[in-house]
Amino acid sequence: MHKQNIDWGNLGFSYIRTDKSYVSDYRNGSWDEGRLTPEHTITMSECACVLHYSQSVFEGLKAYTTEDGRIVTFRPDLNASRMAESAAWLEMPPFPEDRFVDAVTRVVRANESWVPPYGSGATLYIRPFMFGFNSVIGVKPADDYQFRILTTPVGPYFKGGAKPLTIKIADFDRAAPRGTGHIKAGLNYAMSLHAIVQAHNEGYNENLYPDSATRTKVEETGGANIIFIKGNKFITVGSPSILPSITRRSLEYVAEHYLGMEVEEREVLLEELPEFEEAGLCGTAAVISPVGKIVDHGREICFPSGMEQMGPKIQKLYDTLTGIQMGRIEAPEGWIHEI
Image (cartoon, rainbow, N blue to C red):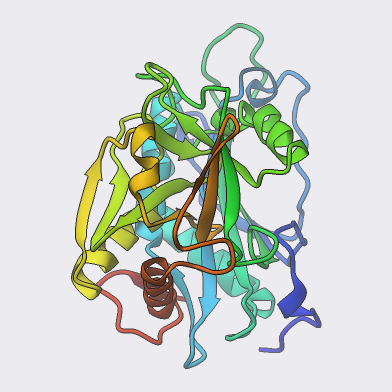
């Protein structure tokens, strides 16, 4: 299969239309068979539920070209189950998990020429999403839904790649206790837009949100979970109101079983931040982006790993996980789904 004529090494994290998308409709209580389509626009009523009451959920995963030339995705079964959980929370009919993985396989195969070559630093980003489709004027769940998957080749999520980020303690709340912070719903990201624009205008890369109940504990950033290193400990935040990142869960396994680190998933207090040696943001889009500095209302918390490169432990975590994804390192059973 020929590859598209693209400067793969200079791709940004932005949308480029590919050949086919996947579409399935939910009507009269069931999902149809689903189909690949060359159409990349959506026509719906001006009164569609999603436009008024934000009834939508989404996922994100990537297709990679491995060192030996295979095209693979990473743990798509976990994306399928997480999307089903998100949908159920918003009273949406979950798209069947086995069909989710099949749909991902079909749409990647249909866009094979858009999967970046091995060694380019780029990947094919896969965005499954689902939304309330029919007209709804009163506040209630929709009756009809559409599930879609788009694909687009992308470069690094953060400009500058692995250069350590500077983030700030946000003045806003990301998610309420017993709210929707633990699901991947568009509404959670909409509320972060004002905060991230403000952070960018002030010269920061991202916001770090404290818990909204006490504002004394670390939760996550607007687009990723946060991880910390202290000695040989790999520390992640335990909270019921943050998104259960597939990348973070994978890194926990890598830290323990590949690198021999002690893994702690627990509450992390803001006052602990100066005690950590390294920090990073993790997620599908970023994999791991190192954090060099956190600014708490003028007080700078600088990690010993510095502002020039990843710290040594986070570098090992990054190298090991991407090595697994790219086929350079043997993967745990079931982690790699070959297209």
